[in-house]
Length: 358
Length: 76
Image (cartoon, rainbow over all chains, first blue to last red; front, side, top):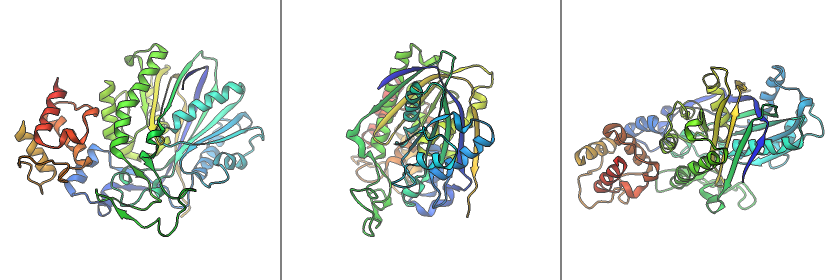
């Protein structure tokens, strides 16, 4: 779907990160890497430190903590919110949806639309597009977009492909109508033929979790996983990212009439340092314009990496106080691809460390 | 160029002999996907060439000849 919306803006972004941090170099015993490989992969792939939630903590917990802080900071009022949209692949429960749990924790109106969208790394671009669509129907309201994941629990501790980069984070963005004549261009694409390229076999209706499904077995590369763990065809996913993401981005440029050099910043989903480096080379843009520093510092937190990147870089992005042309792009489970191109003013951005209870 | 590539490969996986003729590094388990991305990075740094992401596929790194061809193709 290629579409556009007038007069929309992202007015605030809060990122809630676990206080708990782990370091790849401390996990050597979990993986079959040599010491030389570990040092090289730390640099090439961005296997560094990452923020990891504690068992039992949920996306809903982090969202409620972040929204509480936003209300205390006066970022919005409960009466201004018309919809709560959540994008995640780690629901707190099968039932109820996280958006309803969040709605019930505060004094939001009963008229508030609650919508959970099952989306992984592409979630922020999907969520933004749905937020813009929702705002078309509610001119005087704002949307709370909650994007984040708690996937560390779903990745085997002996999965050397995914575990060293997986982090947890939950972000809350305030999306609203504005009068600045801004046009946001959005493109969402899906290719379900590769739906199982990123896959958790057990835990749903098809394969309930049983003692048998949790038995971990090795693959040919030395990864040990049970069926309740995330499995990813890394080569296929990398190929899709490198081939398809630039096409979606170029489609938006053609629609908006901009050239790639007109874009001030590319804020992309950060899957690994290597992937982002190859993407920036493919697009012909420098890493000053396409940020590539979130994975080694916080980890890949799925749909949260784009808003986390904004929180990390908003000061330099908007240092001169002028509006910037920003391209968001993401790729992930489904396989889904999404991109949004819009002019942005500086949103209110903040990092919060989640206070663990244990 | 071949000597330089063998040196990089040997530093990466010292347990293997990369000078053998007619050996498929991927099929023989001498290189996996992590070795390939590391190799790409080392080649880019040592030889000043950017390898296109679309070329980062196992068949382009299965022997010394294929690696040389990949580098040459990306130099053009």
